[in-house]
Image (cartoon, rainbow, N blue to C red):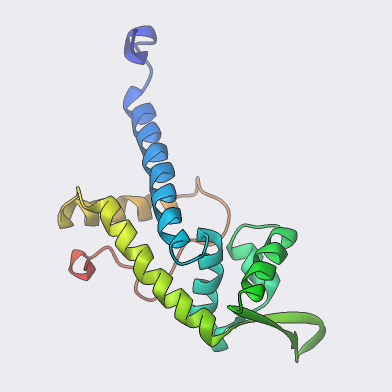
Amino acid sequence: MLGWSQVVPDLDVVTMRTALLFSRVAAMGYKHVEKAFADVGLSAGQFDVLATLLHAPRRTSKPSALAERGMLSPAGMTHRLDMLERAGLVERRPDPDDRRSTLVVLTAAGERRAVEAARIHVAAESELFDPLGPADLAALCGLLERMLSSRVFVGPAPIVTNDSSCRTDQRS
């Protein structure tokens, strides 16, 4: 079988190959992390909600803000919140500032599960990046941050945390 560079000699095959590898690593990594979350009875999406609430002021957020951050429709977020509420990990409460609205509050059980899942998440991600040394990991982190800050990517705000750094001395 002929490769792209033989069929279309002027095609930028390095970009094509890089995009293919990036997509494959992302898909396989997502499956690996999703399996780790299943071990604590969560999906990656459910963990995202718990983690968002864990970092929110008073461990509270509006469902619409959670949906926007998670790139979900309101109906999709409602379903996710229903599952988390049935598990006792979140509660819905009336919004004292707007009686037409509700707030989602992380419960103590939800906080414990979020922390447990975060530890499992990081362990699973560490397995993914084990083939890279600290310098390679820091370089990859910096390149990905640069890509996400480009004007090509539109959508939700970039991932920003108070500890977002590509320094290798933070790797455990």
